[in-house]
Structures are given as structure tokens and as C-alpha cells.
Amino acid sequence: MKNMIDCKTCQSHLPDLLLDEGYEAAHPELAAHLAACEACRTELQELRATYTLLDAWPAPEPSVYFDSRLGARLREAEAARPEGLFERLYSFFAFSTGRQLRPAMASALMLVLLLGGGTYAGIYEHAARNASQPAATSPTVNDLRILDNNAQALQQMDQLIDSNDDSGDQPST
Image (cartoon, rainbow, N blue to C red):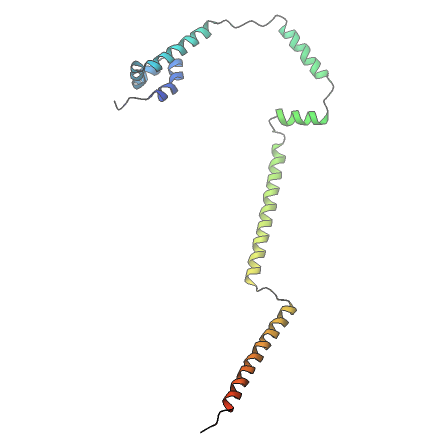
């Protein structure tokens, strides 16, 4: 029972069973599943009947005037006035393989990559350079820092003077 397969796997092998005569003999687990499963066996028989019916169906012969009509249509298409610019561009991009544009597209992609990489390298280098150097402060900011330091120094001096005045009022014994 270890080699038994499920219906989904068997149905995936049905085209091989239809087209290759020795496929069922090469895969005995498929033959065992088909012998045990009525649904898969019925589906295989229906597919074989469809293939037999298609083999028996005769393909219609082309008209005797087919070649002459096709030649006339091709000559008319060649002699027809060219389409407008947008129609020609649309048909070119919609129906061509783009082989003519591949070198130009590769060059454009290379240019974009070079510019993008160069820009990224310039930004990265600029950011690294600015990170190593301290930011220059403006003279106004420097003046404000000096005034703030002076104000702190004056407060400390006032506190020292007040504390000395308080200690001088006490009588000494």
C-alpha cells in the first residue's frame, strides 16, 4: 500500500497515459490505482473516446481560391497608405519583439545605474564627511552661549555674596 497514489496524482498523469502506450506498464502504481478507482478509470476512458473521435474527424480542405485571395489581400496591405504616427508606434510596441530597442534600452539602463550609483556614492561620502566634522555654529549662537555662561557665572557670584553676607551678621564668640 506504500506505492498507492491518490486521484489528483493519477489525473496529472492521464495525458501521459493517453499519449504514451508504455507509460502504464512503466508505472504499475498508476495501473493499480486505475484498477481500484472507478472515477479515474472512467475519466481515462472518456479522454480516450474524445481522442478517438478527434482522430476520425476529417480536417476541411482549403478553398481552391485561398492562395489567390491571400495574395490579393497581401498586395492590398502593401499598397495601403501608411497609418498615422501613433498607430504605427502602437503597432510597433504591441507586435514587435523589441530587438531593435534592446541596445538602446541597455544603454539607458546602464546610464541610470551609473547616475544613481554616483549620486548615492556622493551622498554617502558627503554624509560621512559631515559626520566626522563638527557642525559649524553661527556667530549668533556663539554669542548666546557666552551670554548664558555669563548669566550663570553672575548667579553663582550673587549666591556667594549672599552667603558671605549671611555669615558676617552673626556675632563671633
